[in-house]
Amino acid sequence: MQIDFNNLNMNQLSFNSEFETKVGNFLGEWFSDSKTVKVQTSGSTGVPKVFEIEKKKMMNSAEMTCNFLGLKEGNTALICLPVEYISGKMMVVRSVVRKLKLIVTDPSVKPVEDLNDEIDFCAMTPLQAENSLDQLHLIKTLIIGGAAVSESLKNKILQTLSASNAATRIFETYGMSETLSHIALRQIAPQTEDYFRAFENVEISTDDMGCLKIFAPNVNSEILQTNDLVNIKNGNQFRFLGRVDNVINSGGAKIFPEQLEAFVKKEIPNEAVFLGIDDKSLGQKLILVIEGKSSEELNQKLSRIGYQEKFHRPKEIVFVEKIPRTPNGKVNRIELKKALSHKN
Image (cartoon, rainbow, N blue to C red; front, side, top):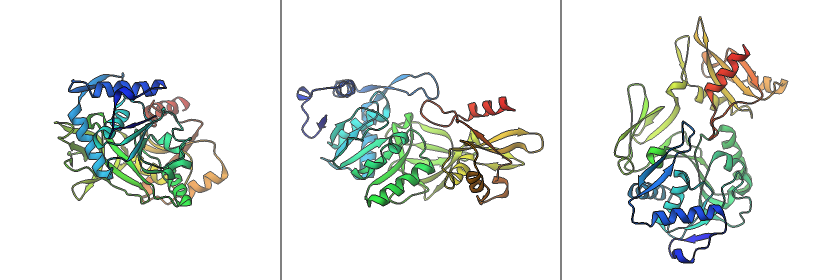
């Protein structure tokens, strides 16, 4: 199903699937007299909730993304994210605001496996992107969000696009429900950037602990305080270091596990997680948890890793069959710690 927002006639739309009907219902809500629409949270950090968002602020968010990416009237976009949540709703709103031609595809882990023609714009989760590598060359601009993009996926993307000689642009998003999708993007391909770039009219700063503060008045009138430790440069760019509640203090040295994980996963294909385990002499002992079975080849790769600091090298390496994850695919460090403590 394709909806042309440059020539929209709601009465002529026919919905042939449950998802197409949901998109149609959202459009009915969007074009109603109400100044707000209802949005459901994913429930990944608690009980799912339904809250109302001003349409004007959603339009402002859509404008920021479209301007940043250079999307133009008449471009094609593909929605393959659930429309109950902000990610799916914003794909529709961007199409409305910029008068795009929106292709509606049922959300799945392989949303573009039947795609044969080029499209200008799409948004996916990391899992969807990983299962769509063979079709990425057909997408001119792709944004990936919902969870961090792993080093492993970045490498697969770059290798795939290099092999096909595609000019596809791919960005990782940074945002949250309160920012109505994202407020910053970081390019993954064709070049890989270390820093996220904030949109125009978005002010960023840090608190006393180095955690990111966001003031994006076009989408939220409040200053948003995050738990994300960052480095800021040039006033509008920031590099994510890790969450403040994940920082490991080992022998007086502060260690950012997310940074170490990204470094290690450039060397090995396995999922890798650094944890701080209580230790009498160090306070916290740094351990590395690897998903999968131990092997001579893998252990050799691990032994050859050249850590930037001596205290970055783990005191212990543990292999587990499966690393626990939250409903949206993020590593569940609390459950992993619990599982390891039960083993000891």
